[in-house]
Amino acid sequence: MRKHSRPVAVVLAAAVALSSVVAGGTAYASSGAAAEQLWESVTVTGQGESFGRPDRLDASFAVETSSATVADALKKTSTAAVRMRDALVKGGVAKADLQTSNVSINATRKDDGAITGYTVNQGLTAKIRDLKQGGALISAAVSAGGDAARLNGTSFAIEDDSALLAAARKKAFADAKRKAGLYAREAGRPLGRVVKVSEGGPVQWGQGGSHKFASDDAAVPLEPGRQSLTVSVTVEWMLDPAAK
Image (cartoon, one colour):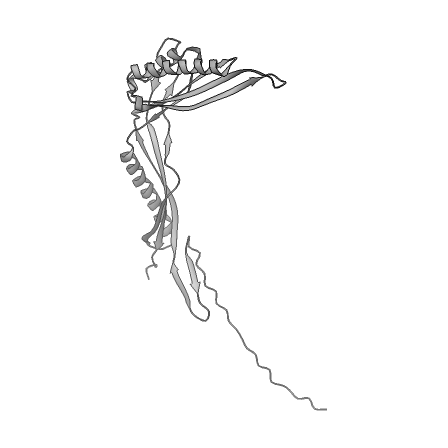
């Protein structure tokens, strides 16, 4: 029996994969066409820091009193709060720089839930612009409030930080550019134009200085020191084609 050989057609298909793996770069291709590369880029984050001397002291005061009735607790709290406010105003703090921060009334109870009395809290924040008088003003306010007075905390601030902010932003951008230039050189590519700039998160202030009571009758010693302002920025640069 004679065997017939049947021709076999073989079709070979070749697949070509194109990819771009340079930080942020993307390569696109359409079916049956050459890949179209939009851009290759490098994205880095830089930080900048500037320093300034505080010119404002923010003090957070409070008054806390307890009594068998709400009315009496409120009366005691209001009396102490007014005394503290008047002491600050007498010392030179503008009324516009004083603000009641909160008022709360809480019941005190026995283990079985029975009410034994009431505690009233009232907050007062003050912006003290004469730092030389800051310690004396804090002591005067606490003294005026008596045993009901509380000092929840203080912080230093710079009233106009626009110049410091601009300096920190310039440093942050320069830091990002240095990093991008390093990556571009390592990749053997020239650094191209900026594609995107975004400032990351809120500007961060670093607190400086210290404060403590020296004695019951003495002014609070304050050391403003200096404050740091930190800015972070994320920048994307195009990578230009390598020189042939």
